[in-house]
Image (cartoon, rainbow, N blue to C red; front, top):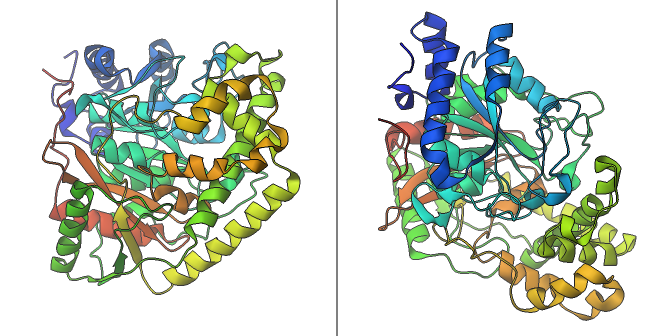
Length: 501
């Protein structure tokens, strides 16, 4: 037996159980995953670095007897440092960078017994809600090759959706697990701030807005992996509330009657939602009522402009830090060719702000966090469509108008006080929050949030629904997500590009 043709009929936990019982071996699963990668990756460009020999070596040396013993797994080419393996962060500056350490999350992924055999594509520095880096090229959506797979964990989502692996690692700083999950018909779970670690190289990426996690075809895979990875590491700045029991156990528990608020409003702009997203929302509301939950229409009383401007200012500041401190990591001075035009523009914008600007932005954001969490005390769960529309066409998320005009200038000079005479944050917000309309709010607040594949458009494109709960309450989300998965199964839905025989 050289392969395993039923591979795609199992989630990660299912494959691990087969290994445990001796029905298949880790080597057979790895070879099957490699064969499927070779079959479909040329069409979707999800995996940008193969680690086949390292994977075979890990099996030969003896895998840890963890939850996902023997299951093929992929990690993102951003944050997930693996000693001896390139980590390009999606940009030319890092194309030859090879870390000499494992990040804490990679250590924990390895400890589960998962077999890491590749790294997935990501936009440069994870900045875009689509995965189209100049260095590696665009990742295409297996449901429609001219549509985006989302970002920044677009490579991870495309690989899972296309049947290469049942689950892959990613990160979420503004929706980067939930956006691609919505685009590719998958489960993308962002844990609470502080639930998973950042170490040892990072302290609080994007001012604590980032959380790493996984994208999977099943709710229980996300829960089981969070059980394996959660917990602070040495020197962590955040620590999420203690967990009672396991997240996996919550998935199969009967969900009690929940009070669920839902909204068809954008949380960061005045963008209107596409009809398909509204149809998916109303269908989900009906399903929740059928399941016995109390569902009410309500929108949190948050200040959209303060959230949008503050979020963008933080990202600009963080990008400036990433760009101008890259030399300390790669060991040489950077040049204009090392980063994309849009990245330089954002870095120059970040460089132009003062410490007072950043402090004021943080004060506004912290105030809005309290407004949101106070409002959430009235509800168990908050529901919105994950995005304002189904997956957009490739190339539809690049800088336009004023930003496109400023970008070449920003590559060459400091913007300085110029930005204070231009409503540039408003322009950026108008562009960036037309499609990604709500996911970053949960990164700002730190609340757990999950996108579930509960609707498909008339064109057959996935449309995710986003559920968020109170800070630290992943348990409620896993209970509800497990119930919805049973009521409206999605596991056997297959995209146009799907590996198999």
